[in-house]
Figure 1: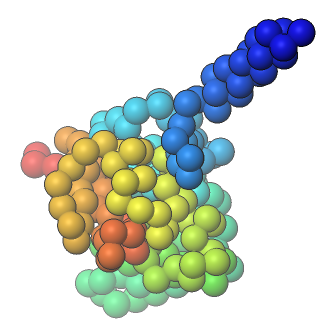
Figure 2 (figure 1 turned 180 degrees about the vertical axis):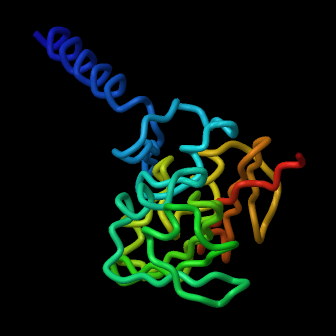
Amino acid sequence: MRNWKMIVGSAVLASVVALTGCQPTGTTSLAPTENTTLAPAFDPENAKEFGIRGAHVGEGIKEVMDALKPEKYEFMDMISRESLTVEQLAKGEGNITTGILFADQAQVLVTVQKGVVTSIMVGGIPQEQSDKFKTNRGLSMYDSIDKVKQSYGEVAGDKELTYKGSKYQVTFSLNNGKVIGYRFDMMAQNS
């Protein structure tokens, strides 16, 4: 009877270990956010890797606004200094336009050129709001440097970690081993 209990107990334990993926205590597997379809490993050539909340650089301004759902926003052309609407930006108006979006008690900065979002910057997020500003790969603000490397791969740096593809890059700003900001950019293309 004792051997039977031991066999059943071992089988249950083996099942639990198999179902939890054999992760060490205190770790969680990062999963892409619900608005994206990303491969398990970081792909530096996939534009969808470079953004938050399902929005990403290289996408049209209207799609980014739909994904981020800001309560307030303002866009200003950096050359003419005139204010522009989302509709004007979507039509390609403006030179290089910067926008401040207020979403969930935080600011998100975006840069738009010819109707396309070329930069998304996030920082200064209140800790209680950090999960609302996950990267499309599932990384939250204030996550550890280890979680960045688990999700995006190994790279050197202690104040910043930068991951680049041929068209896009993301830079994670760090303080005391934790993420305090991220910036997603389209890199200038030589024509």
